Image (cartoon, rainbow, N blue to C red; front, side, top):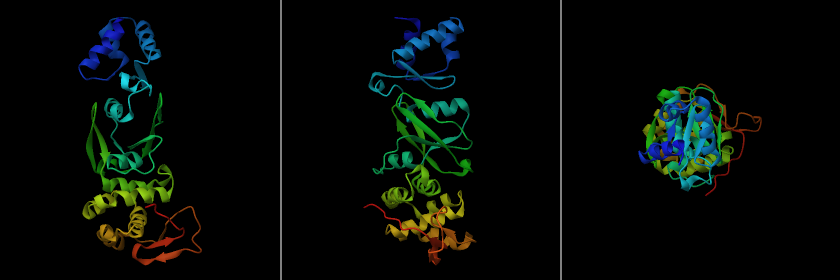
Amino acid sequence: MSGARRYIDELAARGRYHFTPEAAREALGGTKTAVMLALNRLARQGLVAHPAHGFYVIVPPEYRRLGCLPADQFIPALMEQLGIDYYVGLLSAAQYHGAAHHRPQEFQVVIGTKRRGIACGAVRVVFIVRKHLADVKTRPFNTPRGTVRVSTVETTVIDLIGYPHHAGGLEQAATVIAELAEQIDPERLVAAARTAPIPWAQRLGYLLDMAGKAEKAELLRRYVHEAARDITPLIPAMPREAAVRDAGWKLDVNADVEIEA
């Protein structure tokens, strides 16, 4: 067994599934070129993967078909190494909260600044930029490699409205929101809305009404009445000439939205 193979086996035995090339060089004692050649051999064997510059993961047998660790098992360590605040959001977060509709093709991670996505074997990660990240509420979820930070239900539904193009469009976003609605705490929903642009709250409240969950949106309605200064369209990119005005949400309903049961 090579020294590099022993190194990753020892890391895995201690429950650590990520490392830097610098740490590998320190442990193995070889030249930079020799250590990189050894890591490349392990990568060709499917034993390690390289999702980001300066960051390797160990791939256990159950994930060899993916060619990488699942994203939620390495994103926390990668974000810590990079010093980037983050949370798992949108459709990926919705799955943690029990939503079964529309499994995302990419693992969706929300951060404060623009960053290129990750392709690691069959695993894909997309980064979505959100302002006021420090104000957003999250909660930890356990994974086989530790914990991952996930947006709360209330933050998740706010984000689904704010970034519908990352949810397959407004109708799919509305379907997921309806599926999560029973878990919404009305007070926490208002708190989440305060971290986002007010039009997001206007659109979300309307869709909660459409989903038959008006009781979850009553406090949000009061917030909109106090904070919203303008009438906003349900879908900004569509014309408003034939829109129906919803005075309660200060919203021009310029499209029909069908919510799947």
